[in-house]
Length: 141
Image (cartoon, rainbow, N blue to C red; front, top):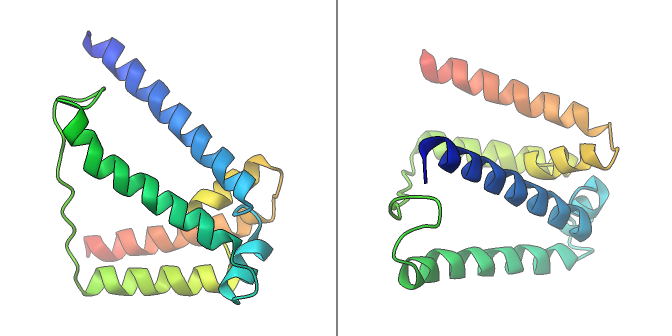
């Protein structure tokens, strides 16, 4: 496949995966902050099934794909994704959790919620963008 053809295939695959992800978030109710907050208040455990199902699918894909395929469909080889845990990662995770707990919104569902017409999520996305900007400026210093 030529370079331009591979780039188009990757772009279309990314678009399809994003649309499928957004559809899944919408069907599961994760685009509604009140559903997420009821889950976090331990009064509705429906999202536990959604998250458990997502973890299971990703775990199977990461473990089985390299065994079943000689190489990725749109890549040259499988990559390891090492994680480095440090103080910044822990602080970022804590801030993300506090923000999620306060408003019931994280970036993926907020963007998908905009597609469903929930324009109030623009406030949450503005806060997420501001936090990302501050972190980026802090990392540069």
